[in-house]
Length: 91
Image (cartoon, rainbow, N blue to C red):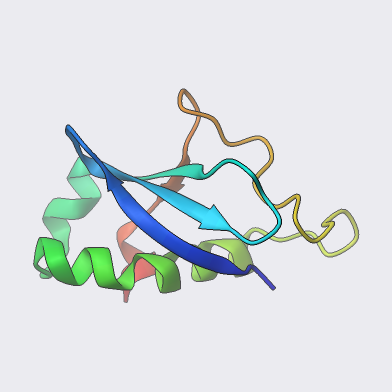
């Protein structure tokens, strides 16, 4: 299970957030593709509020229980390679 402590918008990047996970010192960058954003009938605030649930859906769809070590989820995520959410993660 992914344990999110909190998340915040990245200033100057309207489609990117930093998500803080329990057990990790650094946040993971998460991005909603601008084209995917346009297809959602949600306000920016609603997207912000639903981001943790969307990331949980992404995690559930993309997990590999045999390789997943708690606290090491999304280790490969970086500023240049953020976790990319799709519109279907918000519905």
